[in-house]
Length: 165
Image (tube, rainbow, N blue to C red; front, side):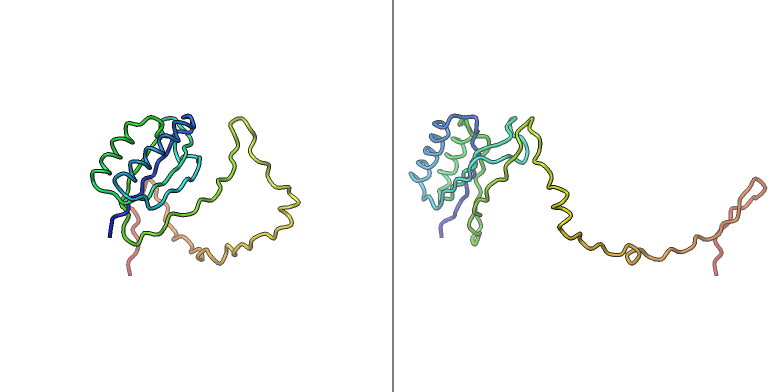
């Protein structure tokens, strides 16, 4: 059974369409020249979880393929040197790994300087039943009275110690 690898490519959205298309075509050609392309997924432009090289979003592409160690080394070197790639990762999949997920559409984000989407009208919120809250008294343990302490003054020489029975 041949090993399957995932290549996750994050392409710079500021790069030209021709440059991004060339990166994808060259990557696919390199994989098919020395290996077998199992799957190819285009997940589109998405926001990054954190900025990479001062970029807030990238175009996601996933290639699944069978490869030799020489191909992996060549891909790693080529992708590391290629302009227009924000980040890439090659991962060896364990046998029995499920297929990649289908892509959900990303919710729209407010652009900088725009106001966030308006809150729902109060009338709409009033129509929804309020969630039941558990009684706070049932969750709290019964309070126990604090032990009485004898006042200590300048005239007392010994500190009061708890009595042991």
